[in-house]
Length: 198
Figure 1: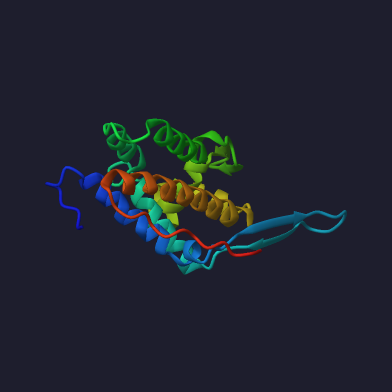
Figure 2 (figure 1 turned 180 degrees about the vertical axis):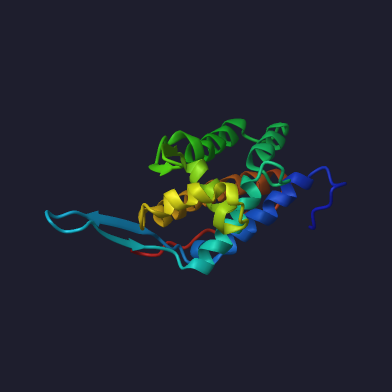
């Protein structure tokens, strides 16, 4: 059913559209995995190796996640959780656990990077990493965020790895929450993800 603003379930239906887009992206549909390894030997530069998502698939996934991440979006995770908790048939504890995990991915994991920005050491949380990528390169090109993007890019392969890890973790939260939204609406859940062996 299409989501219309007059529908009392508009927010939930909009979230389902975003969740389906997350589920249908290549990286999620295929069960893709990422990895990172760095090694340092004496008198040899740091060697980094990363197995990352292909760029178009990652961008599609990040675009779908952005709908849930952006504060003013109808599909915003916090707003959807609030809407779900107004329903007496929804298990509020499950909604709370999923939202806590979503929040922890963005804010609870502490400082991920440190880098110089305008001559000062800046610490980056997962939220700042994702926000910087969205606004400096991913979807917008805001000059004010470019110094942060440069600092993160200088870290090497660890920056795209951690960025993709953040987005994949958020995707897991979105899909878990979508199960509860589907149940609340009396709709079928999205298909499970087939596991791809490493």
